[in-house]
Structures are given as structure tokens and as C-alpha cells.
Image 1: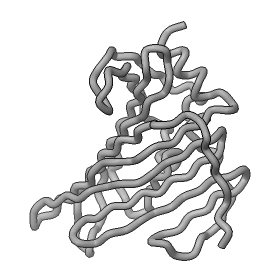
Image 2: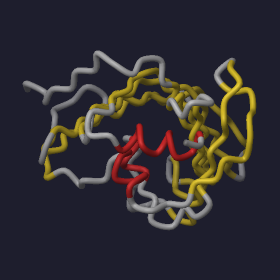
Image 3: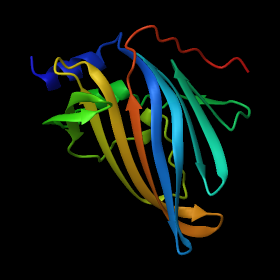
Length: 198
């Protein structure tokens, strides 16, 4: 079995689980100039359930978004506030790979300090960033997204990279933002995801 076919089989397995850190950066460009800041966080996936926590700081303003999807329900909060609950969208890492997106193995590259197969997504139409815990707000326009998966030679998932750019207003100023995230898989077992208790 090829690296690509083995990767797909592992990701779409009903008992697939993974967890690890999120790292990256966000850059905001306005007519006043450009500034950037760090993005950090964690992610967990277990079957169709997921939990993401993503923090960023830009222009001196920090924020954290937590999202948890368990079964038929999704929970979210901002900056440690109250959790809100809504029906889960059903858009997960597994459903994304199962949806028929075209993945191409473009060869071996160095990523996360290892030699990994780079699996690119040919057509981003229909790819929903909420599958990765990244909300897209109503004020964001001209969204462009890039997505790559990374795998060991035997198809073992090793992580993914997301690049996104969009226009929106920041502090009431028109801006262009770019976000680059690396989600590293450092464990494929022992994942526990539970709904929030408050």
C-alpha cells in the first residue's frame, strides 16, 4: 500500500486518535504598516470528536478560542468565558479526508525535524477550517486557504500545516491578515475528550 493510501486508511479509521501542539504566527497588514505575533495551542482528535485550544497575540491584544466537539454537540468559548453549546457541524478531520478531497504525495521534505511525505490538497473548495478548530467570522472576506498533511513513509500521520489569508477590520481599520499554523502529532493513543462541565 502506498504512503498516501495508508495515510487515508489510518485517518478515516473509526478508532483514529491523535494529539499534539499547535504553533504558528499571524500577521496583520494595515495602511499604518505590518505587525505579527505568535499562535500557540493544542489539539486532540478521537474518532469524530475533537478539542482545540488556540491562542494568539497581535497588536498587544491576546485571545484564546477553545472548541470541543463530542458526539452531536459542539462547545466553544473565548478567553476563558462561558461555554456555549450548539449542534455539532459534523465537519471533522475524518469527514474531510473521507469527502473525496484529492491528495497528492509531492515527495519527502523536512518537517517537524523529520523526513516526511508532503501530502497536498489540490482543491480547497469545500474545505471548512472549523474541522481544525479555526472559526471564520462573518466579517472576513477574500479568504484563501492552503492545507498540507505530513506522514511517515508507512502512512502514519505526523501533522498538518494550514495557511490562510483574508481581509477584515481590526480596531476599525481595514486589514489583510495571514495565518500560518503547524499542527504536530506527537501521540496517536491515550486521547480523552469530554464535554465541558460548566
